[in-house]
Image 1 (cartoon, one colour):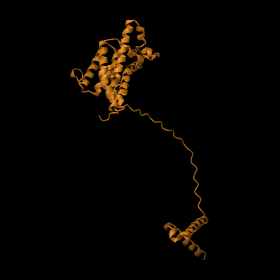
Image 2 (cartoon, rainbow, N blue to C red):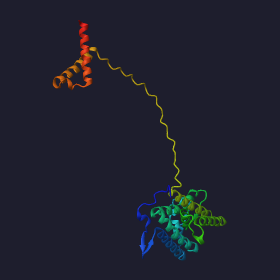
Image 3 (tube, rainbow, N blue to C red):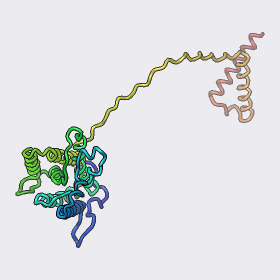
Image 4 (tube, helix red, strand yellow):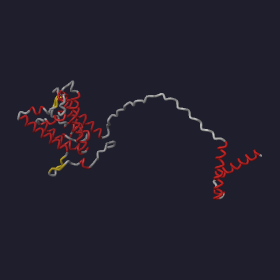
Length: 287
């Protein structure tokens, strides 16, 4: 594709992180494994009645603004078991793996980090006016949106093209959030999907970051004192000119004595002739 950025990079970037019994393991598989472990841990803590531990992990805008910044990063480790969570993990492996193969491991991890952090960052920004809380948002829908932006015409669900499937899913989740009046969910859907789509377009070279044109500060003008007038070069006296001419003539005569008349250049001959004529005029004036 014309205008895209460098997707090649080192060959290892597009290779699996490791192999497990002959099966390639990508970063998308590792993210899925971490989330599954967090779901199991969440289930065990709920069973043991240790919800207080989970309460220290969920995102809460008021507590974040009071200094509990770790909640921006820990909220994703609180995942209660559900069919929706299982479907998200399957989508993360299927579509996240393809996005990782296309971009490479480093850029896929960057995309996942942006998707993971954008929701708490936005909610923290509006926290003083709307102190929301949430937990367990995996951002898998945004990874699917990234896949659809890369491969819009690939059939996915029931031969539905990826671009239409992405639009349908975003629309359905938006309606669910509106119907439940779940503003954190609504913000999360549009923030994560928006940043995923923008990241793909940026890496494709279609979009670029805005450039801030800062106004340059003009230097202050200062009134400088007048510079002292340059003194005119002293005019050489006639005697000095005559002494210089005679020195040049003497040098030319020495050259003739050593190498002959033919060693003079045309310029030197003209200078010698001019000196000779000058001496003749000076002699005639004295007579």
